Image (cartoon, rainbow, N blue to C red):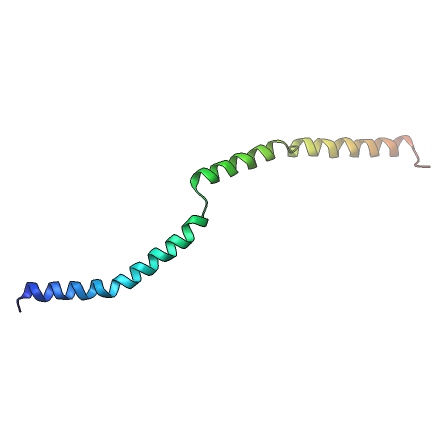
Amino acid sequence: MSELERRVAKVESVLDRLEPLIIRIDEQLRSTLPHLATKAEIADLRTEVRAGLAEKPSKTYMWGIVGVMTAAVFAAVVLGATLT
């Protein structure tokens, strides 16, 4: 048997051992990939999240409200207002 024939036989034996592994990997990918999100779906989700966050009040606005309420309480205490 020539050197080339021995090498070809070795390559064929390696391929015979790899074939079941490749088939399992292919089956795993086919069962998993359809459930993963595509780039377009992620982009749509990102747009929806940004739109939702745009509707929320900003931190500056919220701190402004807290400041106004604190000032109102302070003014009521200074002016002697009672809750009764």
